[in-house]
Image 1 (cartoon, helix red, strand yellow):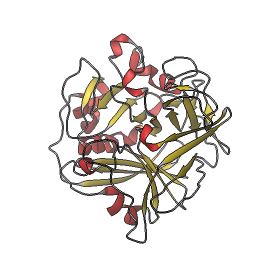
Image 2 (cartoon, rainbow, N blue to C red; image 1 turned 90 degrees about the vertical axis):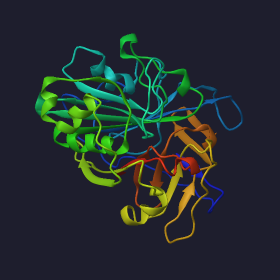
Image 3 (tube, helix red, strand yellow; image 1 turned 45 degrees about the vertical axis):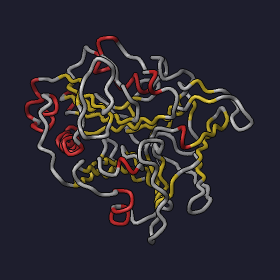
Image 4 (cartoon, helix red, strand yellow; image 1 turned 90 degrees about the horizontal axis):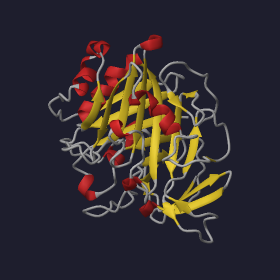
Length: 344
């Protein structure tokens, strides 16, 4: 994947999301497109685009580019089936347990819930947190950028039309159950909106998670919470959550403390209030992505940042990938942020 920006300077950077493979795992886990356990994966759902000189094929808004912990070198893998299909689909394979027949507790949260589910809260965040006490206890945290996903579980798996037009990102991480309360606390701080859930008796032993299952939220604390987590494959992940009441630009104010590096940011910048400009006033800069290019075995696809609803950033020199829920919009400045930094 390459990026070009016009604000600070033009550059090309190839990011490899894994350097070495990790051992396979059992029990609840992120799954690859073959249904096998993986420590983590990233799915880039490509935007809907016409065939042109830049793009070798027409995209319908359903194609998926895939990358996981077993990928050592090279580009992304263009999956043979689309995001709506249950075939060769890592998202479906990962979410199977919440569709019944498993002793799994989960919360689905989204600031833009699907039709039939009312309300929202202050947090601008989307994802599914699943946990199981079997096999020593496992947790899966699937974060994404798709409005109205997941839909009503009673109607089965499907991908919403609201997520087809623009690019979207899915970031899945596998954890041990010892990290469940920390992750649940981060969701409380973010003020997530839980709209679907399934509780289990054993979940009562995890107070913060149990509260989410009951949709009983902590009083909004005006804090920034930072924790270092480890995946089941022993990958270090830095999680940062900000309260909606804490008025702070995470990208500009936290990067020097936490990253000690300049960053390149992709976020949705088409909303109310206008986009924030690249920040080049200090030793460490924040550069907005303007154009993306993803290399796959089927060729390269290029699209504008304006066609991409995903939120993430990379460091310039330290090979760190960060999933974010925060848009670089003036109107979003007063909302909240959650970031997950994966060290490579």
